[in-house]
Length: 274
Image (cartoon, rainbow, N blue to C red; front, side, top):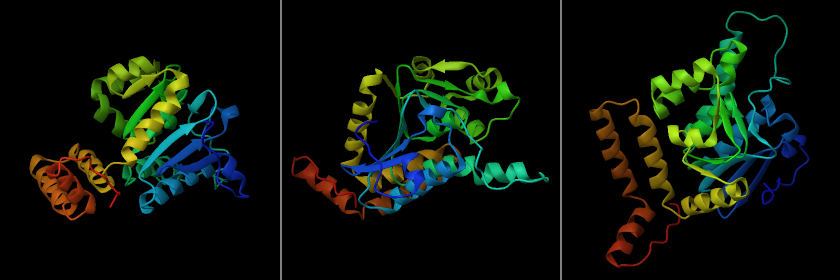
């Protein structure tokens, strides 16, 4: 995206994962358009690090993950991954746990809301990277592909965890069993995408959403994210207890006090993210 630029630095990785902070929004941009942004081990580690930084930095209040060129992320590019030599039992599981699953967990666990601005093809782990985000905006040319079955593989990167929760087990199995390409409009209909926009409006829409989130009550949004994610795996008693605890904690924040005061005083709130 033209409005994001890499931070100054000498690390070659800075050109492969662009990063900029603008109006309290962290923009993370995959930048290997010649490879349809198939993500390398180094890029994955960089994205994980940037998401952790976003959680810890009070000056960042929303995150956008996007990419350059025609592809959002065509899957994993394992070239350059550490290791090598003869494979021993446990190697594959260890690689998945330390790699793809850590990437998806980093998005789910980020304490700031994360928007995926999907500019093009999102396949394999690229699709799961988008689905893990809190909100998904897709350009009209974008498509999503559960490509694993085409290679005789089992889905990784949390796919079998994410998809049933988003669209139910039957639809998830259909996508994973057949590996068909799902156009953005169909993905929206299924519930995988929040909004489909013309390609030339993707950045504008993502920016508007992110900046709106960045002016909101950041801690309340973070706790809401945690509650929703946990509710999918909780019984009612546990979910209600978590909700009550979140309310107790949130009412100690400056933004909660501002929200109540602005309501009483009949004015628009001014949230500071704390």
